[in-house]
Amino acid sequence: MKCSNCGMELTPSSPRCAHCGRAVARDFNYHNMENELLNTVLEDENMTAYAAEDEFADGEEEPEFKKRWGMLAAALLAVAAVFAGAVFSLRQFPDVYEYEQKEAEYQNCLYLMTQKDYDKALDSVALLLKDDKKNLEYLSLKNTICAKAGTTKAQIKVLRQIIAADPDNYPAYGQLLQLYLTEQKQTEIAKLAENPPNSVISSMIRACIVDAPYFELPSGVYESNQLLEITSEQDHEIYYTLDGTSPKENGILYEEPVPLEHGYHYVVTAVCKNDNGTFGDEASGEYRMGINAEDYAPPAALEPPEIVPQAGTYTSSQLITITVPIGMKAYYSWTLGKLLTPENGTLYTGGIAMPEGESVLTVILADESGNFSEAAQAAYTYDPQ
Image (cartoon, rainbow, N blue to C red; front, side, top):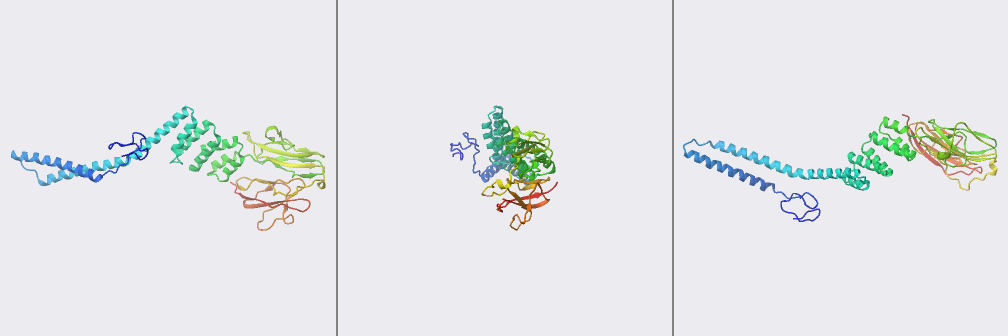
């Protein structure tokens, strides 16, 4: 007889393979076992009967016939109990062995962590999760290994698995949000805000969202000097640059409206920063001061405009902005089912308040010659909490 796992030759009485430890599956004949036990009891009964006959020879009174059968019935019950216990033990053996294997692997994983061998520790916990992918204890162990190893991408993945298995897991949400903040993943935080499991976690997520700044002055060509006011819906700090570079490193702290002077071309880029030092998404505007619109040739191909924020579900008030290149205008509509043109659309002059409920915003760009772009659309669900 050979092991079904590794092929090693087995002894007839071996309960498991000495090479790989796999439990040996045997075709056990319960019927023969019962007969053997019954024969043993009957032999004991005959021995008792012979002893009783010897006692009768000395003149003692013979036991009643029914007494002997009562003893036989008790013996049969004992046989049944032994038989049931044997069956239970045989059936439980694989489960007990599997538990011992998992416990040994778990302890091995902990040992590898103490040795800071995180690659092998991840291999070890992968074996534990192979047949039990939603086990929170093993997932938490993997999360700890990833955190110690500094593998942020893998840790984000396992934290999302924990949340999927246990939607109300507050510590997992807290760790995931912190990683998203560190990695500047505002888009991913916004996705979490779309369908929070409860009000407490919803508040945790909203506290991590950093809004994009809003430019009160639309991009365009202006004949006279202008003051550019930049605002934050959440009253965060705002940093900006005037040459199109990112303001996250060398930005100027916004404290008052920015003067845009005649004869200059500005590409203003701004970003908000919360109290934890986390930046949100950048916003930008392009301004040509003192340059006539006729002197500026728009691009030959009109690309669809960019809409911020992206389509999605929101629980807090949002101001929708449209990126409008110099020399163009944007038109929008909330009405579906008709072709949007400059004639039937609403001229975009600044931020658009997101309406409550479900809605779809359609936007186009138009140049001075009457050409207009393909429409860009964004579907929103605004459900105030």
